[in-house]
Image (cartoon, rainbow, N blue to C red):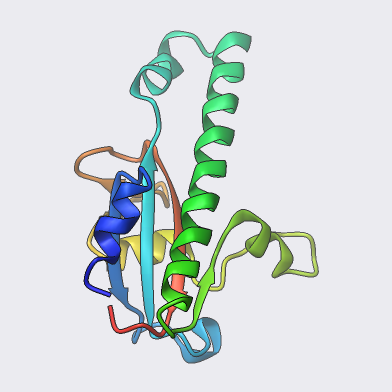
Length: 152
């Protein structure tokens, strides 16, 4: 499992971190004592235009970027879980479809929030705005996570 970070980065993730989830209640994390946080930074030129051009073109560009990055994160998350399972461990890819299936009331929620795993893995901190803030990317990134019992 020592090559897992290199594997995930080779899939074009910008940040990868590992978290001990011992402080998360077992009823939330299940049989998964560890989490892997994965992030992709959003295109800086699109983010820069938030204050310059909040009009229709910006919304189109941002929407396309958001969807593209989220789709890629889902792929990386699934591949990471498959990588772990192929090595004899359990893993849950907290992809968009997994998160959407978790709630009956129509609201979406990960078993353990991506930003919690990311903060515990050392990516950064959760700011007053409730967003994960990183030193390198600020809050201009998208997150996903994998829950696992692999000794990472």
